[in-house]
Image (cartoon, rainbow, N blue to C red; front, side, top):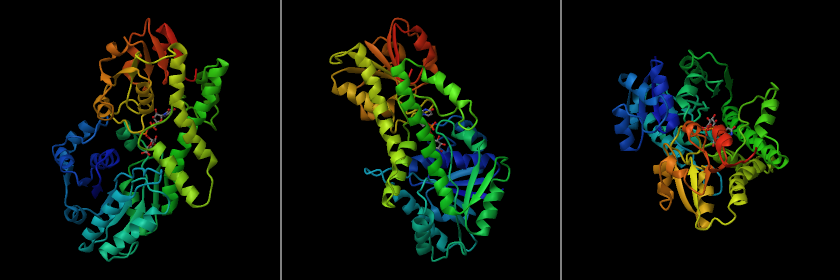
Length: 422
Ligand code: UGA
């Protein structure tokens, strides 16, 4: 059993913390947001994540949240920094939250006598832990890293919506360390996991995270580019990738061609890696193409729509799905955003439905009508933007459906059906 503190209770922090609690550890969440603290202390999830609520209820004796860094650091032996690293407008990574967490943590560490390990779980570019976080903590605490306190990188590979499952079933655990004590404590913490555990130096661990996300994003853009060619040839890209994915060197997952990737990770991380590469004097051609393909992909849905309704002005267009993927209310970088923007610009009336993300979407698009799926299906044409499970059971008979995510029932039933890559 270990005493752990977690800074930042976004989906990575809260799932990691509750996961550790389920494994028998004691966890203290530190956050600057009072409303999040109150929710956590009443064992309620601050974000929606499948299975989280149940785990919080079950383990409520093993965790609590506070605004007080001193208390959290003094009462724990290891701290995970799990704050967000959002993109700057130029695509580079914004480290403000990481820096302020390091600063507050360093101040709290100053008065602590026992050895303490600090682990960066936030996605940060290679070099950040040692070049940015380390000097801040050293300055604020007056202590020397790797001697008087430990510092490590332990990137997460959690998918939003599947984060609880992913926490308990990782493909691998990556531990980037320099000091022996932190290595031991992290190995002990992850002792009960059976997956491969990779011990590297700190910046290699940071790079593994970026490379994983960049490769997955590349796989999707590749699938989409091939899918666009397939569409012109009258070939079903899904059948093609079934055949391709059977090669064990390639693997079948992440070949779902469609309207591209969104979310808080892939677009941001690929752009940050591009910015970093350019700063180093490299021209990352492939990574730039991954972003280009991804930005054009949603426009193809509109092109296909216009094949059937050339003038969108005054027409009612339905949207099924607003979240960046199913099982989340997150709309960050959702492909629905550029699609709805174009439709509105062209004078269409937009009626949209999403099982969880309508409220978030309404904050940026108040002019859209939000309605149940049956109502959305009555529109002049309907675009499928997110592959929610419940869309597999809708009645598409007699409708014009332009599908960006491959819903088989729509393909079989619609009066007019167009798939973006099939
Ligand atoms: C992603 C990674 O999958 C996680 O391993 C990683 O930990 C996380 O980023 C992160 O860096 O924190 P996530 O963004 O939650 O997780 O979502 P994914 O399930 O990977 O989907 C990302 C986007 O790709 C979605 O918009 C999805 O619709 C799209 N996608 C995914 C496709 O278009 N085709 C596919 O075949 C797979």
